[in-house]
Length: 162
Image (cartoon, rainbow, N blue to C red; front, side, top):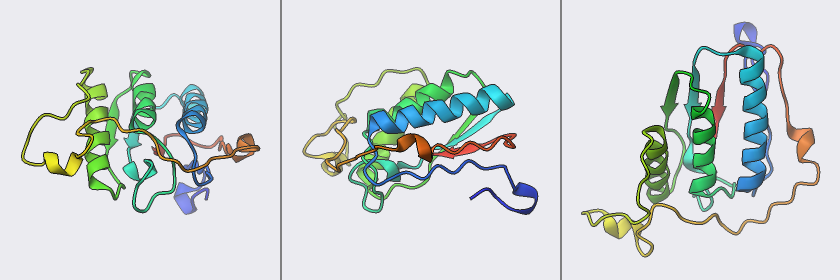
């Protein structure tokens, strides 16, 4: 997918295999986003943080932990550009809430405790009652991962879906 009509060449689409893990995903993310920011010097970044990439999502098929997902937010924040962060995707509501809470903490430069405090919704976070949960057990094998990196040199701004 490269876009069409006026939007042609304004997209980066990186096909990923089911089961991608934190290490592989963040390596790809950092490589691609670094090059885009270096090449096009955007005035702002819109980062859509879809939590359907988390391990165990009802509809997703990736194997990211909340910390791996949040590392992408931390990385983009370091560019010190105006940043609009949105939600989107994520079909296991407990993990969506965990993920967006951790990422909000990162955006506010606030270290949050791992333990979720007692509240009326705590039963949804049992038995762990913690913000950070490990990634799943989906097996990921990437022998040719570099051939999946697509970079379009016509991009002036971007939205990267995680």
